[in-house]
Image (cartoon, rainbow, N blue to C red):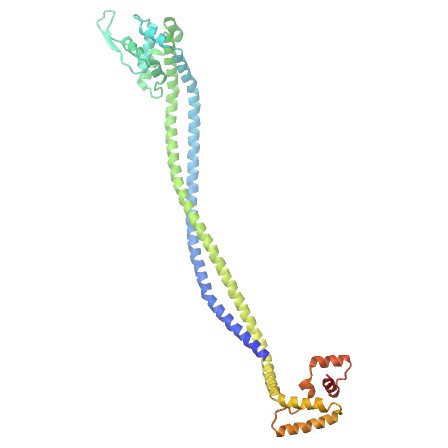
Length: 394
């Protein structure tokens, strides 16, 4: 009976495992499909990311070269300007020596010396002030240019010195500088030390004009470089803006790729987990089937044992009746007498159709194999008569 129940349990487990394996198969197929689909997208996104990264690296290299070129230009400009700065400082320093009182003295001159006229003329030319047209004092009857009238107006400006300090020295027209270099700079009278004899104020203005002319030389050299630098910086900024756009696009692709990769890893783990479950279920099923196959012989034995137990159960009434009589009345008799009396009882029982075993045995009916084995170990003989006596005494 126990064997039959165990066999039934094994068959039940096989049915459960079979159903479980079958139910896992669609999930495994779906998981494999999802992994394949995500894998395709990941490969596409990886290719796109690689393409974007390649473009970014190329643009980074170009931007790097542009930055180096711009830095080189900036260094050249700085070096040239480093030469011009002391000149500019000397021009401003020359103006710092002037006071409003000095300017007033020059302005109030009725007949200014030639040196004063020459310096003020140069200042007017630098500032783009036109001369007056007056009659030639020598009586030639011709009109000549005279800067003294405009010079006095210029000197009368309350912001005269301030305007000179803020003079637009970087954008002096070429024609003006040509006039300064041809008419004034080479003039032996246009020297600060000579002008100082006539006016200390004009000495400072003379130094300022000379400094501005020297600064212009450097400024004209630096100007094209500044333009080139501005252009290079503009190109660099444009390239960096385009590069940053591509970097942002690359980051977007990389972020999307990371999400897909994480999703892929999750689906792979899910697939592996299902594969492991299917594999475990399959192995359990195989072992159960092997167990059922190995129990094939046991099944026959269990069937025979069940039949035997059923028959013993039916014959139990008569067997117990004879066993009771044997224990109660035949304990003092020999083995032979017991056998004779048992046969007599068997015949009588059969007359009344009481079921009992054809080959009755007190040992089989009331004997406990464990107790009998213990008696034998303790010294009880192993023959049926001795064991029957032991059962009767127990």
